[in-house]
Image: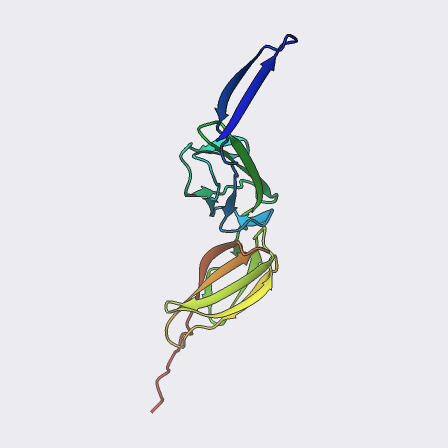
Length: 220
């Protein structure tokens, strides 16, 4: 509270005095963190979400906007999850997040932060065959996009037991050997990762047919 006194005086020396009190609200400060961080231009994967933590002070009403569109209501003082979408397979998407913090006296402050949403990589491959006699030689044509590293996994019904790492768009040739008396199904999983750890996987299988053994009768 600040007291204010006004004294008015005319040229004849007559005067009057008025008193009032001003209420000065505390300064509002808008502030928020994204996944606990205030680092500018953080990068995230499409298809995930980020936690927005409201750290404002001296406010009681809040308004969130994402790219100019209101996202949360006026009571959003806590932590909220913001889903991230990027429909492009090649270009980044920018999210401008703005928090407006107010008091009942209409004191106001706002803060903007921008994040970068990277496209989700897409894993995929084609193979030049699905089954054949062991040893079975299969060529895999990598059709993935948006990644920087590819990792190929190979295994059977008990899980993946072998893997190899290549460039994100590299093709692969692999020879599969079946058991002596039973056919073998081998599962192939391709995992594509981009430069900030966004991941996509593609799964397929091939079947290596066992050898056929023929036993001839012994002449007597």
